[in-house]
Length: 133
Image 1 (cartoon, rainbow, N blue to C red):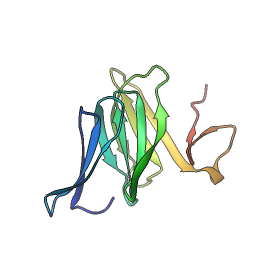
Image 2: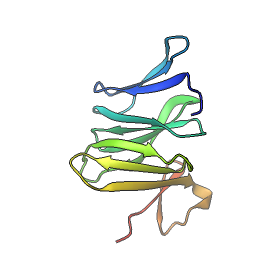
Image 3: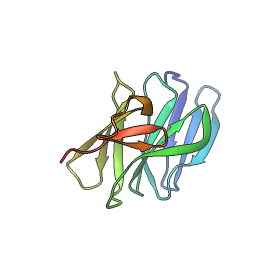
């Protein structure tokens, strides 16, 4: 998102809030996860953001339509995710860190028409690269 007047916050009450700082008002508040939300980040140059939750999922939202979100990554062990960051040059790359872990997961998101079915999993119109063994 390129609007410096819009910020997003996350909360341990499972919600995220989008604020219009210039007007000092809440644009929207939404339930983002089933447990606490530990991190929130806007993607650069596009109308999307992602959240990291204690429920072990990373969720993707479109600021033009808050009706639903897409789970783009889940921990098989339901390990909480505590941090995430978008690549500043490529809004299709997202780095994720799990609680009590030294691993960094890199997610590559792109439209399903560009995906290779052998290496990707379709997640609601987005695809994520499977971890190579």
